[in-house]
Length: 76
Image 1: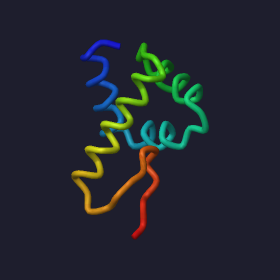
Image 2: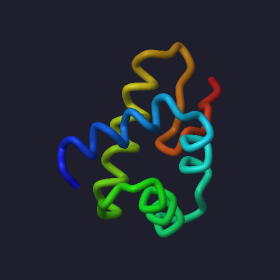
Image 3: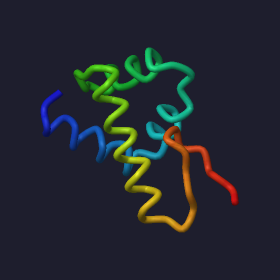
């Protein structure tokens, strides 16, 4: 995955709520790979995991709500 693809996937996670919710609700990394590939991105499972981790960390930093790596709201 190129840096530009990584940035594009991050942006898609940020602006495309439907894509983000489907990706974060995926049962396995293989399901994530399938969705990401269908959206035109060419990357490994580790690259997807890294982009999702960065997205989750950034979202937590920008919000008063806290979320797990896969987007589940943490209460308490």
